[in-house]
Structures are given as structure tokens and as C-alpha cells.
Length: 362
Image 1 (cartoon, rainbow, N blue to C red):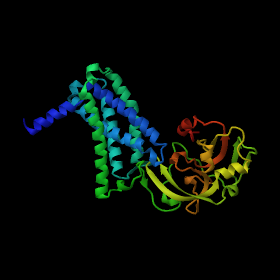
Image 2: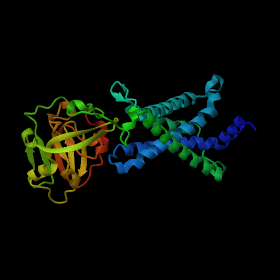
Image 3: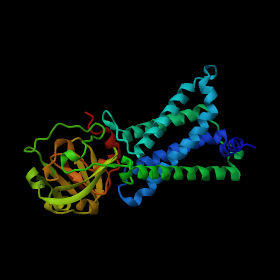
């Protein structure tokens, strides 16, 4: 037997059965979605397994999608074999290829902006599209796997090989980054690329969804400290500009990070200025002028900073002036900008996840 023939037999043996391929793609999209969303909230190195699972599953998706495209290529390239679901299949394939291409290119450190969006943001957009398209595609050809499709050592070896191939492929990509000193070589474990310098100009202005208020008049600005505190109070910009300092790393989910010197007032001191927490106080909620909000456990919140300056400069409006939350090691979207209210509460605020999608819309 020729080498080419042997390789062909090996590839054929490794190929999952058709029904398993379809359901594997569906399962991998779910894994990618869950790990992708969870990764948005992970900012400490101990969370690296979430990112590794996301990357390995993504590269495994490449292999399974390859088998799928090879199997259906004749139905796609021959117009006579098209069905009503063919356009949906083609759209799903394009979204999948877009997700994979932007992810791989980002890992190599190519920092291209498409209008407002970084490639990482585009990658997330393609992924969200897949979350809708893949279930619809599966529904058009709904066939549950049969016992013979998944039983036996062959299936176990196929999936073990799939995961191993994904891990090796990612390691190989990292080695290439290191060998050629690509821009992707100095990414954080989150995938974010560094932004060097000090002060407002050192890092981009990013807005979350529709959060884009007009500049706030600092003379009229007031910060409310309310909720489960002994003496709710209202503070001016001068009260918040206390000179407390913190060196903190801001890691934005749009794909960049920066280390800056922030100054303002420690949140624990704000709470003391309002007489201190009372009753069953357990959470602190930070509310933006746009309605955007995020909550932290009270022990964590006490050590956070409400910043008015960065790198020795007053915050610009785009970076959250007059005051923004600085909460390491939280991710950037949790560092609430334009904070106008600090509320001490007895419980967390699960609705904050919904508010991240609708805040700022008038």
C-alpha cells in the first residue's frame, strides 16, 4: 500500500460518523459559548483553564468542521442538489470560518480594527451568530445519534485524538509566536494585548453597548452613598478626589490590557463617610449615569478605588470622568464609568447582566 493510501485510510478511520459530526459541532459551539462568556469575568491567572478549554475546543472545531465540509461539498457546489436549507448551511459555514479565522489571527497578534471593533470583538460577534445558526442548522436535519454511532473504542480514540490535536495545535501556534517574536507573543493569558504608556492617551476609549453619555458637569456632579449605611450622604468631586493611589491592571474584553497608576478615593473610606455599613450589608452596587451597574462583595468593594485620575491626569470623559470604579482583578466591563451612586445592599443584583445589554438606550 502506498503512503498516500495509508494516510487516506487513517483519515477515514479517524473521521467521526455523520450524525456524530453534526452533534459534535453543536456541542463544541455550546462549549465555546459557555467558556467564552465565563472568560469575560476571569481576570486572575488561576482562571487559565477556562481559556485553554475555549482554545482547545475551538481548534477541535476546525477538525470536525473540516470533516463536515468535505462530506457535504458536492451538495454545496452542485446547484442541482441544493435544498431550502442550503442557504442556511452556507451562512452557518461562513460564520464558523469567520469565527475560526479571526480567533487564529488574533492569537498571532494582528491588531486590526474594523471601524469601532477589534478582531477579538468581531470574533465574539461571529461566535454569537453561530449560537443562533448552528441550532437552526441542526433542526433542519434533526437526527439523534444511534448507539452504533458512538459505541466502541473507535469513538473514544477519535475524541481523545480531537482534544489532543487541539492542544498540540495551540501549543504549536504559541511556539511560532515565540520563535518569530510576533505581536501575539506578549499577550496575557486572557488573550489581551498590551497597551503601553501612562495616562488617558495610553489606552483606548471603549464604550459598552450603548453607553455614550454627554460630558458631566463636574461642578454639578454629586455622588450618592446610600443603601445600608448609617448616614446616607452626597459628595462632590472635591470629596471624591482624595489622593488615594493604586497601581492596577485593566484588562478589557475587547482584547487589550494596560497597567496604570490610578488615584481617587478608596471605597471603604466612602462607606465610612456615610457612617459605615449597617444590618446585613453584603454587597456594594456601583451605578453609572447611564443606568449601567455592577456589584461587588462588600469586602472586595472596600478595597476598590473610585478613581478621578489616571497616570497623574484627571480622567477624560471617555475614560469615565468624573469618577470610575477601579476593581482589580475584575475585567474592564465591570469597572463602571461615570459613577453617580454607590449603594450598599444585602444581596447581589442578578439583573445587572441584563442591564449590561440595555443600559444607555433612551
